[in-house]
Amino acid sequence: MALVTKKRLIRLAKGFFPALCRPDDAWALARLAPDEAALYRAMDVRDREHNVAVARRLVERWPDAPDCAVRAALIHDAGKAVRPYNVWERVFTALFERWAPAVEPYPLRGGLAGAWQVRRHHPRYAADRIADPCVARIVGEHHAGTTPWAARLREIDAEF
Image (cartoon, rainbow, N blue to C red; front, side):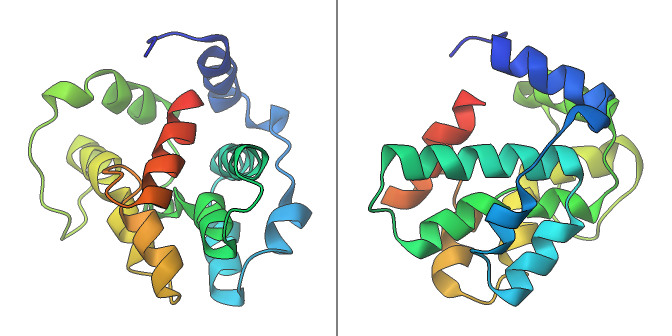
């Protein structure tokens, strides 16, 4: 996997200029259950745009994807909303993830320790807040890719 791609550079630029983001909120909200829609709305505009792009790609690649997989794609990064969006923390933790210190998911911390927590445990933070067990499982496993739909979500997520 290439470290720097055109898509990643565009995503980085949007990190600094969120007004450039245009998530298709109507498309997403039409598919989500009420509790999932609340999680979606709580996400930063940059994460919403990313999640919609991932969900659309999932539907493109697997038109027969179950509803729960599409909904999971739309909120797979909702756990990042436990902390305000900070572009510098996101860049730092992404670049140095390999050397990240081990951090427990709870209690939530501030500062760089909290940024590492969110980087590592955001799938759990989201899954813990999702009522539908199918959606929760896919979201919770989207980094590990331990189930078929979580693996597909992980594959697509890596493209962005």
